Image (cartoon, rainbow, N blue to C red):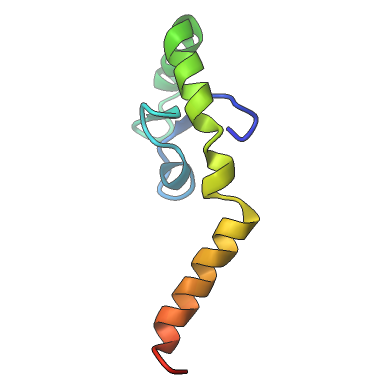
Length: 87
């Protein structure tokens, strides 16, 4: 995604669901493990130039959402919230 490619992934309990924004920058296939459904989703994305290009453009936002700076900022905010004011 950070390379500007649309993502097609199984909708696992962790991971892809937290990163891929369904229909915006990729496709999540349900149920997890349904290989024919994954193949169809891949074919659909590859066969639709407009949708693939739109998703690929949106996928580059993942660099900002998951950059080291942003992730560290989120961790710091969490620690500050747990620690409470004035500590």
